[in-house]
Length: 112
Image (cartoon, rainbow, N blue to C red; front, side, top):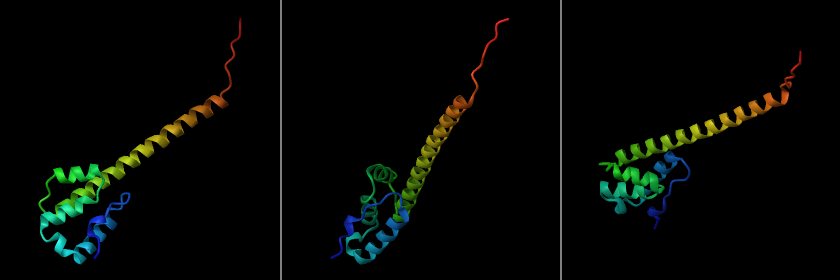
């Protein structure tokens, strides 16, 4: 028997997760006989934060749960990209500041 309940989301590849879930539903249709059971099994493989958000949205259909999960994963990816971009920007700015200070000529004052 195929273990339908061991599916977990790897990284942010929600499409691979969705495809595999649909394959497992076809093989284990008796375990997901109702829409509610499909949603419960679908959500089970997510990290706690995503699982909680999808659950609290109370999706009426599997399609609703899938769309919510996609949106949450997309938001997570975008937030991560922004954090990386900000970090790289700060590194670049720090590097530019260091380069300026290394190449700047010291100011001299003259007495009159």
